[in-house]
Amino acid sequence: MPATTPFKKSSPYLHRLLLCSLVLVMTLMGTSCSEDDITGTEKTCQELLQKKDKEFTVKTTDFDGVTELGGKMIGYFNKKNKIEIAVAKSSTMTKGEELTFFYEDEALLAVYQTTLLFNAPKFYTADRAIAAGDSVWFDEEKSTKKLSRYYFYHDRMVKWYNDSNQLVSTDDKRYYYTNKRMLADASKVLQILHEAP
Image 1 (cartoon, rainbow, N blue to C red):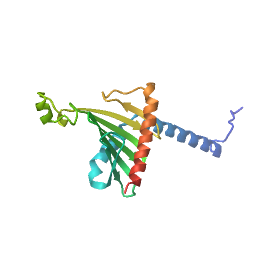
Image 2 (cartoon, helix red, strand yellow; image 1 turned 180 degrees about the vertical axis):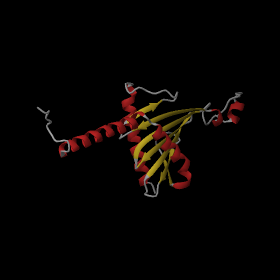
Image 3 (cartoon, one colour; image 1 turned 60 degrees about the horizontal axis):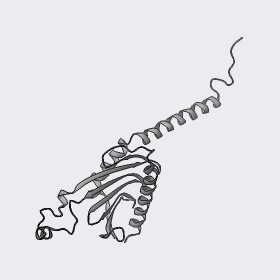
Image 4 (spheres, rainbow, N blue to C red; image 1 turned 90 degrees about the vertical axis):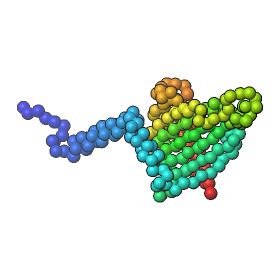
């Protein structure tokens, strides 16, 4: 007696089942690659940085109240009037901070957070130091620069490298709040730059 199968070899049901299975496997592979492998995102960020001064319309606005010295935002708009890079700069007497947001269709891709720790307070000029008998004064060139990087996929942080270039675990208690803060900041920056004159 020949073996029987629940459907014929060329049945539409079999074709649909195989097609759905193939689509599911490809979707899962694409998702894990985008979340686990950030090389594509890193490459996109570097390409955007290379063309930011050549191919984008630039809009700059000042903002107050963030630090005692205020800050500045710079938006790099593409031809469709969408922001691809936004830079938020702020400064205090003892440090400067620059957040560079990278977007794709205004969805957050990554954030580079550069912190400049000054060797002395900004107000401590050479004249003041010499008058006080000190040999050290504010010199931005002698500042310590630190870089943290945050990568996102579908409005969720998937990688965070701290200022020592160490990968921060998703189990770290700061991870959830940093994810929330970065997404909120990225959204606020878009809003401010779009509303700026």
